[in-house]
Image (cartoon, rainbow, N blue to C red; front, top):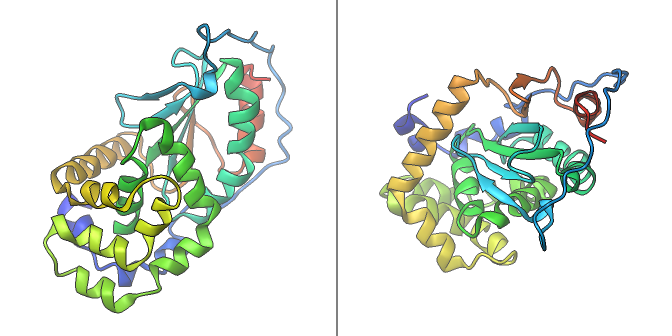
Length: 249
């Protein structure tokens, strides 16, 4: 899909996609032989690895030791229900148990299934880099209410589709309550409007996101890579044994 095609898709027609256009939640019993644990790596003085955030060359947001021997990458869509499930089952364990050791770093990369994903990602990236993953996680934690918001004002959304690009996304975010949602979580409505009006930056984001997903042959969300190798599965019960086999504890 070209950038112009993605940005011009009618949002109303995409509502059903938010429920089905992501990977299934396949799981195994997780019986994977464990490798030897890698010793914990101390963070710089006065820091914790869970507070270290890096924007990677691929455009992802990595939390943890940038030189961690185990790197887990998730390609995710903010409107994907399976991604939402992983955000509530796997991410808390990754961030509270594995990342603090300095052995595991977790990187989130975008996949845009529809224009709503572009709006949500732009708002999540609008503030400090340290806020991106926490804001994304809050979107997924409220997945069903967010979907309801996106479907709550179809007339206003339809009208916004006719606006210039530098006005369209802010108008949609206003009409669907997304500006209010993010404002309640620390990103002011004015900040959100300004980010959504930056059409050049949004187009660059879409280009980068698409190029990286194409390069890694990502066709559904979530898709995981562990140290560059694709993980065959989407559920935490599949991902955690792979981390442990690599030496995470």
